[in-house]
Image 1 (tube, helix red, strand yellow):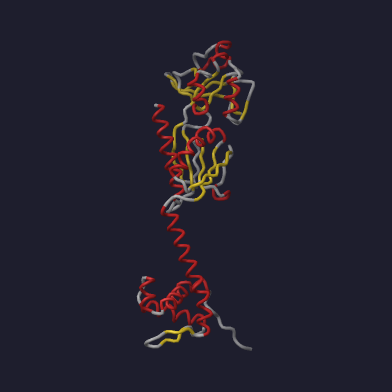
Image 2 (cartoon, one colour; image 1 turned 180 degrees about the vertical axis):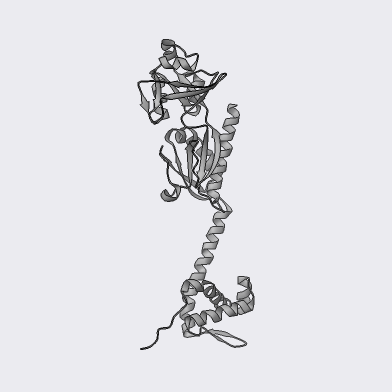
Length: 311
């Protein structure tokens, strides 16, 4: 029985194949070496190693010319295609690195995304015309690597250890209700007064509200007729004069400015259910893609500007 020849795995011969393709294309060992950034002797060794691994002669070499053997011509067709694909891949990467382009997949909570992120997108698109944004509104935590997201916005003090997390902006809160509600139910003067009010709450949070005041931390047990897991739904109920709620200011800022809602207990700092800061997170990488860097830097700039103006 004829003994089977043990060949070198093709994956270990990629450098040799690239050198072979470049020698054939340039018809010169010296020119191939210059193109690849190596010495002529290194190219010669690559060709010899490839011939040894494949157990065939690929090139007829004389002092004045090079020509392909029959086996060399067959191998060259594949090696040239491989080299072209590798060069095309490098071109694509260089082009992507030069300027932000492509689609950024973003996960954010429903209310924050609609009220804070969506209004900023027209300016982002104007600044980066080759970048598109795909937004997913969800209040659950997503897994970036499993679900294919580039960026996540989280309203939580719990930071993900497997992500690069960057603080975007503080979350400030207000205890507020409509003027009509306060006229009928009275305005609370201290957090303890909330015990007599219809306090509308987030269904996923504990039925306690906390405040920092002149005498330190105050915790109040509250009760109400409605629990819901959406800031905008709570805000809508406030506008219907149903009760009083502890909400992030970004969810009710326009209503407060226009007088549709009124803030109470302003001498206290309310501690809301989402923590103290908004964070943006993305997967760690030595070379973050330009589109992700552009999106993160843009939000950092715009939300910081909004925060500075509010102060």
